[in-house]
Amino acid sequence: MAIIHLSDSVGAGGRNVRPDVLAVQTLLTHRGQRPGAPDGLCGPRTIAAIKMFQARFMRTPDGLVGVNGPTWQRLVHGTIPGLHGPGAAGPAGGGLQLPPPKPPSSGPAVPAKDPSMTELLPKPEKGTFNAGLKAVSNKMMKEMFGNPRETYSQDCQAMTNAKLKRNVVSESVGPFKATGLKPAVASLKQVFGEISIALPLLAPRIGTAGMLCCRYQRGSTTAISNHSWGTAIDLTINGILDKRGDNKVQVGLTLIAPFFNKHGWYWGAMFGTEDAMHFEASVSLAEKIKAELS
Image (cartoon, rainbow, N blue to C red; front, side, top):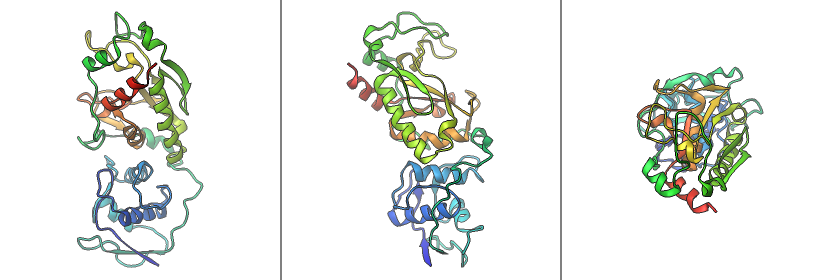
């Protein structure tokens, strides 16, 4: 039987030393999660599996397995068939004896009874998501893309900017059809392609409350919503919108946010006024979109 040690942190923001990642992937598989192939590489699928596991006992899954921390302790203890010895112990996390890992079952990647995906967690702590990403400003968007139209209200209105209009497409991104600037829609296809592989039962439960929508930001008569440029999207889980401004977020949104972050989408849960259903192009993605416009 293999003996597993954890010498450093694994997951979102972790050191992710390859043997440690492999240990966590092996344990996650034994605990019924689906972190992907046990390759020792910590990608979105492994982080999503860590968060899925943490959602069972943590109010705010952070996607990080610390040395001898609560997530590691729960991974090494519990009802793992063939478990021997005391589990993690001491500052280096100790050793754990496991039988050869079994491949994940063909069962669901999320709990069979799945209202848990719309259960609410506290707003994530600062720095948990959007690492390395910067939110765009109205000034930057206007300078980069121009004004989508001449006048705005709180209601959706049509885009009138001819250059932007010719770059707008309505295409399937996987679980639904989205309308926005072509490079932004193409990026969403990549995001949902990865989500469908990592979270195959959660992916089809994701819907949209809209992408392109020329209007002011909620409660403002001056600031333009980033939906106006077709570079932001609002999402639902099981048809349910996450309530804006209550500092709580749906579990399912915490699981898919790392995939959006990977492709340059900034998660609105981290705004001053929490808006967890909202994802928008960050500065880096907006620059890429601009470069690809015709």
